[in-house]
Image (cartoon, rainbow, N blue to C red; front, side):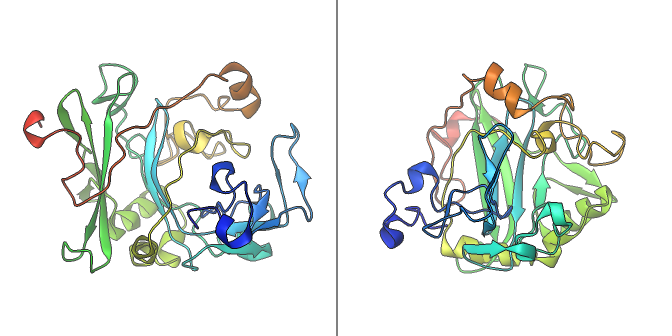
Length: 298
């Protein structure tokens, strides 16, 4: 993704502030502009007029470093066969409505590490009974571990920990088959896909080695607060897919009702929803914790 939204290349003054230049592994077709050109051809508006889909989509590799609300969280890797932003059409977009989700250029499912979906329902949520209490501020720390610990080799592991009230909170270990995992690796992704019976599109699209191409080029940070016109955010915090029993491994992703998350409800009843981001840092592993290490307890 071009950091300035393509304004320097295409002269579009709206630029990144208004989402121009955006792309992700869903190859979204609801974008108004792609590559400096209006996505007007074949545009079909949504029922409420707030969104819609056009003929073209915009595909690129995606690292969901923090998709969350107060109920659930996940971080996810989405490799693509293309290693830069690509305007797509037809099958290469992987359109769900034509049954081509896994035939496109990008891995739409991704390999995700969400503690609730993986079976730990007491780690993250609103209240003091959770290890990470989402009613209070906390810091999210993500580490990208390479083959040899330098910036010169591929990323082989992505780790996550938190800091809250002066305490470092590690991601809990999750049992999958005969092994435990507390981070995303290709081995974890294999085990999770097997456990959940999911398509191995992450592996098909190149896995961590392919994602490393995006990390090497540099990725653009996007922050947003959004709702979901496709499946009402159920993939994050409820039962999804809804046509499978809740007891099926990987289906329960949070404690929200399957009737929740409808944009018409969210936009009417939660128009004041907000999030605060601060102290955004990047650097060598261990250098980005706010404050000093001596201030924290494990």
